[in-house]
Image 1: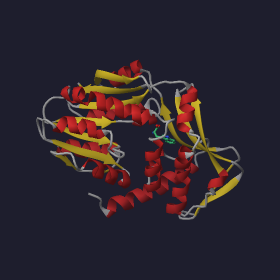
Image 2: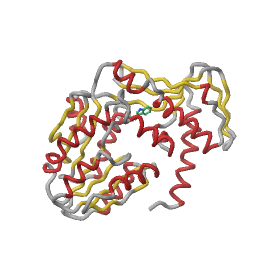
Image 3: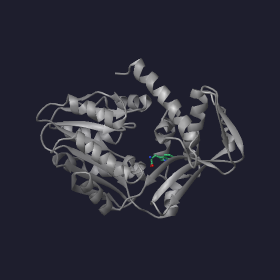
Amino acid sequence: MLTNAIIAESASEFTTDVCSGLTKPDQKELPSKYLYDQVGSRLFEVICELPEYGLTRADERLLRLHATEIVERVPGQVVVAELGSGSGKKTRWILEALSRHRPTSYYPIEISATALAMCERELADIDSISIVGFEHEYLDGLLKVAARHQDGQRILVLSLGSTIGNFDHPADVSFLREMRLILQPGDALLLGTDLQKPILQLIEAYDDPLGVTAAFNLNLLARINRELDADFVLEQFEHVAKFSSVTRSIEMHLRSRQDQVVTIHKTGLSVPILENETNWTESCHKYSPQEVVSMAEDAGFRCDAQWIDHEWPFAENLLMAE
Ligand code: TRP
């Protein structure tokens, strides 16, 4: 499954993305998918345990409470494709509910080899499921799953956590539409969406007092140092989480504490960075329940059911391809 060719190719893609992101004329950007190397994946696991970050626990609560009903709404032989499996802990509820009555194939799709390995270890003990991991981008992986599946089987795509919210609007609708084009009528998508909540609560969730989220974000610079032989001095940057009421998103940045020049020695690129200038690493949009239903319809899905956690407003949405 993991070939040297795939790894070599993504290393050069990392170089290209970092260089083009750092030389953007207005807002410098570093793609969030690169946060999850070995160190980043471990730090993210810790974020999910933090009292301030209720998102993962809400997601897991909903899946634990409603897994049986969710899988009953997708009858017949089911192939599960998960976009960004993470550690695989939350997926257990769905896979156990499914495999109780039918043999199930599970295809986690991840660009992080570390996350893929964690997830395969976590779920290996469930009886009557076969696991095949794909180290790919989400849509490429989904195309591979669609090509493998047999007539009469339905695909159930899982996009848990807040993945969809990390696409800026309208890229979220386009992403759903591209997914819909790969699927057939009768296939389904279980989509996790974080919902609107008080701004202070959001800021604490994305800038926790222990500093784990700050370390997670700063690790992206450390990763560029490690892998591309750059000379970012981490102390000269700070993690910033701010809420934009225009886009209703929480935005993560790395702000420079002073004027400085950073060199990526692997490519010879030197980048001047001004005091207070930021590198934007991620946004996470906070939806309203109705907004999810209309976004799904715009993309060619019908919202079959929606389950909401009220302790930490979050929704699990079962969308049917029509
Ligand atoms: N995408 C996740 C979210 O928006 C992951 C995340 C949590 C994150 N904290 C972060 C990404 C801080 C970047 C920086 O909830």
